[in-house]
Image (cartoon, rainbow, N blue to C red; front, top):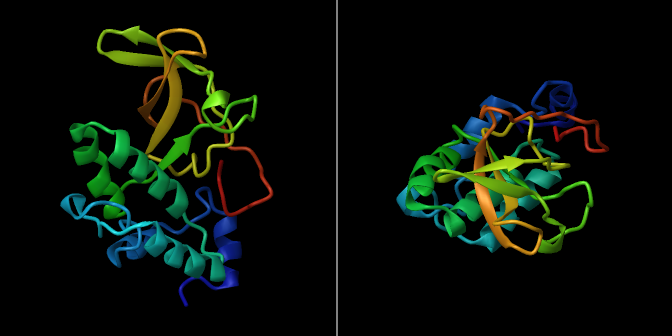
Length: 184
């Protein structure tokens, strides 16, 4: 009811291509936090439950960063440190933050084989230098979960790092796509 086709068309012309008010309402009903453990403010449910919500959002073509945020939350849930989980999962669950995965590169090779971005160690942090392509909802995301390699050439360890959209050196370039409900 809150996202008829006229609203979808209106939202497609906005900078974020989604309604922050509708996103907040969606989070308040628990849909954003379905895959997030209860300890972090989520519902602690599984992928089957999430797919039911996706079917309904697809029925009305509701533009939102739901899939991107769910994937980022799942990656942090599974591979993040306790501090990262504490910082981001509650914010994803309550809709106050949006996340996304940054995996694809210019080679457009899916999976681990396509990750060539490397990091330079700088004290206790890794500094990433390079680019990711076609990052869904990058224009709306507060944090990007970035796949990269550490320790040298492409054969080195595959890692995930959290990069805040406002971190020094981060530049997000929005490019047109066939799906005008996404800003990637």
